[in-house]
Image 1 (cartoon, rainbow, N blue to C red):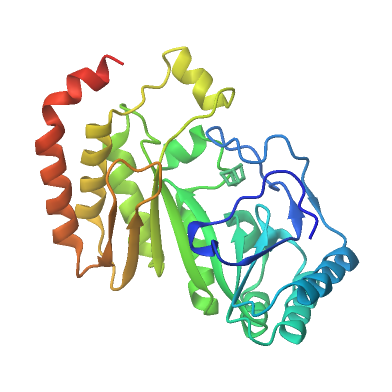
Image 2: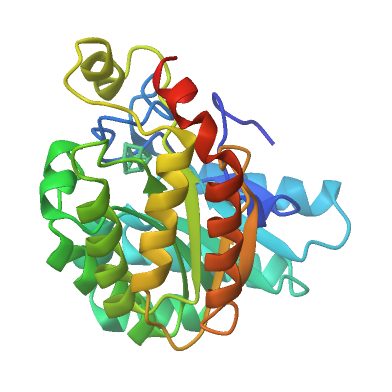
Length: 288
Ligand code: SF4
């Protein structure tokens, strides 16, 4: 396998065979994201990808999961993706799930019939960065879609029968908009009803546009206690029938995991306890 540049994958794809079908991100404009800034987006040649899948078959034993990287693999034409999925089915009959990153734009560009066909060929999971449910925040971070379009995209995936894992970013509204960020994000999740919800905490690499705003004093980062309060407000406003919730990434201040709504009150109590225990240090964090 010949990987190009840094390869990112969701935590749940840690044991998957990673196959780059795109290089970089087709959008690549989000103001907080540094992941693909040094890559010029392109879709890899289909023959190259099919050949690498054959090579992988010769190198590896049982493959249970395959993840199609880089950012926004769903932007590829449906016929291209059908060829890749058909090849995977032929070469790796033991593969239980193929996952892919998608952008709201690439989902909206596909018809429901296209998505159903991809699901029938083995596409079992798509990962969507919702980031925030607030239209103001989505605009400020240059996500390129509104909350309404995000809901439409997420619902389309759910209707196609492909599992949907979405991420939100704690702290993305800064100190000015943390309440709006929590409540509007809960509203979007309630409308989409994804099977999985992951929470990351805003971490800014030097040089990304949002980090420059922080340096100029135009955006105030939340303290760890404020992030916990925001997460609590989010959880208090979530109303889903069944959703696996994870906030246990290295960026998160306390590890939270559970199934909503069954574990919702326990998670809120866990947050309350952490806020109470660490509240006295909030002034110290503010002074950093
Ligand atoms: S957050 Fe996602 S869509 Fe935005 S630039 Fe980064 S990889 Fe691309």
